[in-house]
Length: 166
Image 1 (spheres, rainbow, N blue to C red):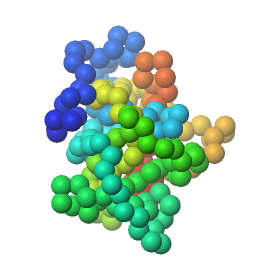
Image 2 (cartoon, rainbow, N blue to C red):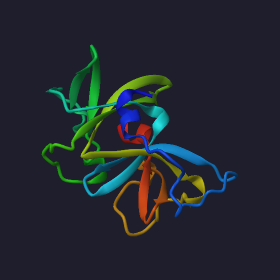
Image 3 (cartoon, one colour):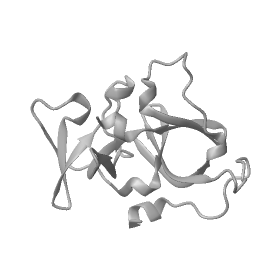
C-alpha cells in the first residue's frame, strides 16, 4: 500500500462492537464520505489518496466523469459519483481528497480518481453484517450498491464501483 493509505491505517484489533467470527470473513476497506453518506471501498482497489489537483473538463463526457487529472504523468478520469446518487454538487473543502482506484472496465484495469469529501481510515468490515439494499425507501439504483454493512453504530455503503462508472 502507498504511504498515504498507510498514514491513515488504524492499528490494533478490530473494534469490540463488531462481530469477530473469522469464519464469516472480513473485508479490508478505505472509509470515506461523499456528501452525507459513508462509503467503504475495497482497500485492494485503492492505489493512492492525493490532495485535489487541477482538473480539465472533457467536452461531451458523462456528468459523473466529465474531467481528467494528471496523476504522476498518467491521464486519469476524475469521477464525482454524487450525480449517480442524486446528491447535489459541493465545493471542495480542506478535507477533500482524490482516491485513485484501479477498476476492471471491460476486462481491462483502469485507473480512476474518485472525489471524496473526507477519507477516514483503513479498517475492516465484517461480511456477516452485509445486507442487500432495501427495495423501498431509497431512490438509489440497486446495481450501484454491492451491499450495506454495519460499522460501529452506522450503516455503510459498499458500492459497486464498476457499475457506477459504466
